[in-house]
Image (cartoon, rainbow, N blue to C red):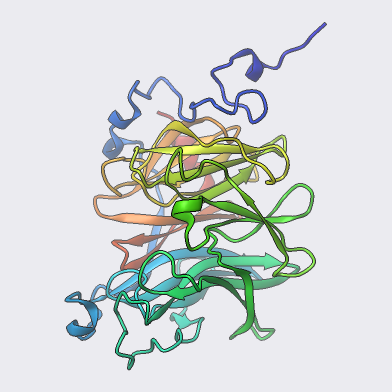
Length: 391
């Protein structure tokens, strides 16, 4: 007798092999037929503890250096837990985001709430220090570092950062660099370039076959689309690049996020810079070598960076700016299978909040985010609090 699983019995439900074109990603009696009409400001509140690690809103930098913009920028925040400490890294630069002179900073914590004084992780970008004429400018004459996350590989911790010209997104000399944490854990050693013409979105994670994988955008990704890099075992610079076909035709794919599903197939989510107001999704059934055509889901999005992961319990969480109108609030959604999310909660808002990165540790979620692209902040949430966001 032929036995059909419940998922296959309902063709509207997504499946990486049997129904990769399904748009369903958000479901529940609480979800209106138009998910853009969700009352995002009144979602169930998730109780958390909050701290600010770095804040440059009061920074004073010569106005003429910043195209009439004072202050600084803090964003691109990433978390890790390594050797009994939490590690946090972010981009720190002059004026608006990603201008000449931008560097990467880091801080550490024993509990995720009290953090060390921030220190620089990367050196000054070439010819773009405080005294350079191009400092704080958008120009091909200047360079900037962009924080790209921590890679925990073979008991060593690497901090990844991209380097390119500061004129636009991205410069033709774009490269992804790695910095290895020294044995004494008080400095970072330059390990060189690990991927040419590449910027990742999140650091590599393990596939079921033992390979590492991370996303890749080349400097001309708006024309050619996005890719995934697979490898990283023989050496930190040993990668193969595989395209996500139609990622520059079906949408303007940005900032990919991927995770492994319970059956070891892969799901990838994409921000759409054409401002459709929804996330797109693609699947791979061969460990990232090929991907299904990205499909617009019914999960709303503010055209903003997202992050999520599979918890030790087997559930999945997705932290994002789900309100399509603005980056407010920051929300968290929960799924049992990594395909369809059935609950959503309110984390923080009533202001510009974005760039989330989340990790799980010892019964808590730690979520790093940026406030107005000028403050690096942390939420610490007991996992038990997620049980209270049923809507």
